[in-house]
Image (cartoon, rainbow, N blue to C red; front, side, top):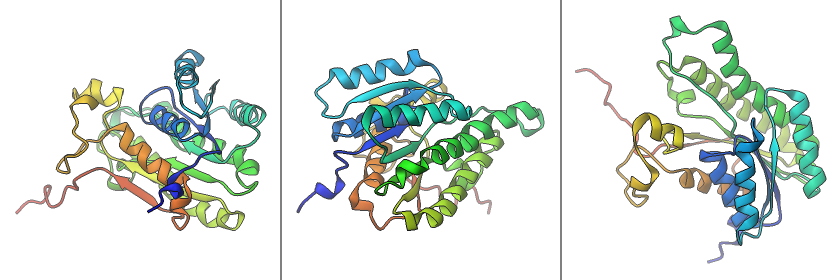
Length: 258
């Protein structure tokens, strides 16, 4: 049985929010597969080490680090231009940049609400809109990162849940529009994942997670990268406009009162 259909070798990918966590894992996975990847974050010093580690390794893909605030359209335009100038095109866009905080809804200021919407929703719009011309040149793939918070709701994180719900709907809408341009748009909705942020809040390290264990409710960044690789590869050629939920064992009936 051939596994070549799962390879994205030869493509160029742009991964936002890739200084750590899920974005970094996806960028490294692409480079492992021979993809040239642009990694970006709001601070150059945070993303330079990611590119350096990829370029100093034996991975066949190369990396370029670019500072970019996805809420700044001029910065996003410059990011896409740098990608095309360095690697000659753009085939895969991963909209991973995001932000959240925890607070009672009554305590959320207009600025706090707007900040989360701007990063998660408007940032996804900016990057996708700016990259459209290149993604449509030969057919490409867009992978949006949402969350189970956008599917099930998220007490104490209402702006984040609302923003991720918008990303899921945006995925469905745009996938229909861009299918005629041979661009596939899909979405990943992770549950709890052992990122540095989650580890600091919950005390769960990725090293403590057994990937072979089915009965668990927290995953690793590599497991999200697995799905991103699938969605950007020819193996998912018939997957369009879908949101793939990656959260381990579902919670069924646990919140029901008898």
